[in-house]
Image 1 (cartoon, rainbow, N blue to C red):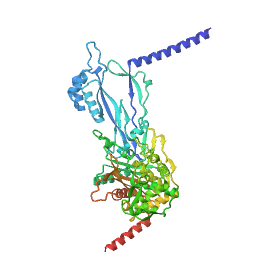
Image 2: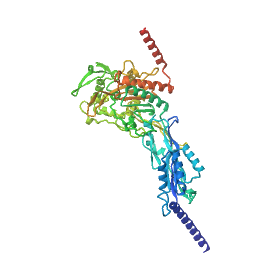
Image 3: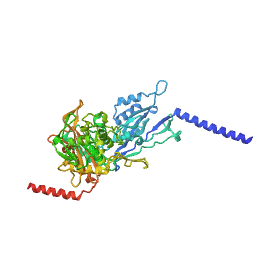
Image 4: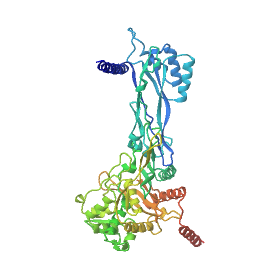
Length: 584
């Protein structure tokens, strides 16, 4: 009997304790304030740890009107330090004065100013303390800053403040928002009648977990090289837009990405949407002659031709489907498949398209990734447009092989050239290298991802041999030459499409896509300009885009310490001596 009574008593005590805790929590929830403790957003860095997006500590200045005794004196100090109109501060404080019934307004807490620099807050704190003014509260906060201003702006992106926290709006800030934002904490606070905080229920506080560090594949030294060379080209040719993407073919890593126009991430007021657009993945253009590698790869892989196969190029005029197709540069007779690429013959590649047929050509285009998103970890990427064969016209089979009637993004074009450089393997473009926690723990890493083997290695090798000759005196891209290195690539000069249908006379999208060293590619790049003003320079990719590639590549190989080919250095010296001898 005694034992049963004891057990009953213990249970009763447990129940009373539980009830006490329950009512205690209810009391706290009813009479205290639940305060969100915002997590610090994680930083974004380049591959070497150079900060691209970081946090700068600031204060939010808050007044607890329930303890203010000298509102006029307090308003004067606040207005002076925070550079606010005195009348405005006085009005804010007056709104919270007790009414005739002695009760305060809706809330005794007044936010006076956010994002106050630490040094301003400290000076304000000192004067308030000296004058023994009450009611001032500082809340810790931070602002997102971008140390590099406009550099890499379309990749990094930016944030906006939503409900007290930061939310990624564009670029990596948006695509990696779940990793960067962290998890907010919470605490209950209670104040006595004097305004002093009481430590009730501190055990209910949940600390915040700061955001992770996102490391990009981009190297800011290479980014600076590309930015400066593209700026020089834009200044000279004044295109409506320009894009350059620099990649490592074997892994798909993006080393630099530049778009023009651009903007400063720290000064976004009044920036037009046009400048904020990441054209590398959001613009759709006709690729023009750079697309000829796709058609040629398909014809070689299908065993319809070999590099030495001769194709009659109709001396520059080819009648097909009721229209006449022309070659841009010269009229040619018989050209080998290699020379069709080297001379960029529209007619030669159109005939290879006819050999392939609608369906097979379409399948090779899709295998190279056109018509699909590449999967790069950036928001807003588009698919481009590749029409299915059933919607093609009678002449589509001659126009599509040379890059017309195709909508492609710059990212898709450079990805296709990386595929050729990588012996036929299509890789997913990577912009994120790794994600680590605030304590240094690896959360995620991003190794190279092979999508598929588009064509066999021997087909890719045959294409590389032809593309090497493009960057020679007999090809269309001699100005893409890099001393000491073998360069492979292809020019593109696509007439701009008109909004009303057809093409606009004298207006072009010019480009060059290439890689080096051709025998073992370490770098692949696309330089593209929309509607340049050529001046005295011929309006072709080989004259406008190719030299920009050359300048970027020359600086990049020096930075990466890539060894030049000794035989090519000797050859360059011999050619220079011969040229000097002829001049004499």
